Length: 394
Image (cartoon, rainbow, N blue to C red):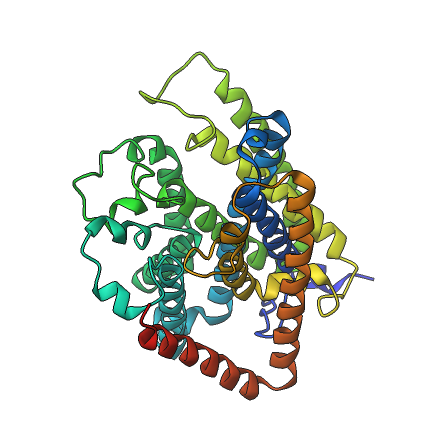
């Protein structure tokens, strides 16, 4: 008997349902959030003398895969969204503007996390311009919001998927290979809000170069995955990704040892193209492993890690306030400071993770049980925060 796919190899591809979730993507995002909590707890509270030892160096390498994974997942999610709503997005219909408003909300949240004071009154009394430097710091949320906005603008401009994805590929490679050049530009005379997007010479953790390429790379992988899945070739594309990751990582490591210097200055562990591809390949391998794990499971509603992945923005924001909330009395950095050993840090990590999961699970369950009620609660909380910001005097 001839299988249906062989009878009609040119059949119409299956559409991706708006309600269809991909467990392995939620798991990768969830693991990123899980390890992110550990990373921030350890970085903020571990004693300085312990940070000079080998265990911290090894831990930092693995923790350094958190941000690439988080950005990569945002890119995959964008590709899935574009696959579902391409016509509406490129035609600037309601879906486009709703997505743009969501990205604007992420921008506002990102900058609000770096307010020098949680008080409008105190902000108006600032006299030293350097006080505002904290606000201008670029973090992972700014990279996500800005890169995604530029991607949907590019899609609306090009209008054709057959053009959009090759152009994104070219832009991604340009960001990777220009990073060593861009990151050495002197931005001291630039506007204080602009420099952090391009250099760590000012207060910035995640300049667009090369971090935006992890997101656009996720968009490319996600677009390819969706295209193959709609044609029932999901297993084939995942095998290709695994092989590509192994080849990419190996070639990148070997390239580092070539007697050839392309860039005037070179820092392998910060912004070199070789290190980018090593990390990108490791993220792809993690994606493949989680896909293999999730391929015969349907536990997205029960998985602790998947819930973290589905409520990643909430967990990300709240855990940062708990750990780094410099303007709040009860943050970890104010209560403990960098005075703890590994065991104490791990204890706080376990406690904080449990609290974050309880919060994420409750919010996730509320949205599934009564979405209008959840929307009302979200609006009420946000309104309360805004009112407190304007009413607080000190």
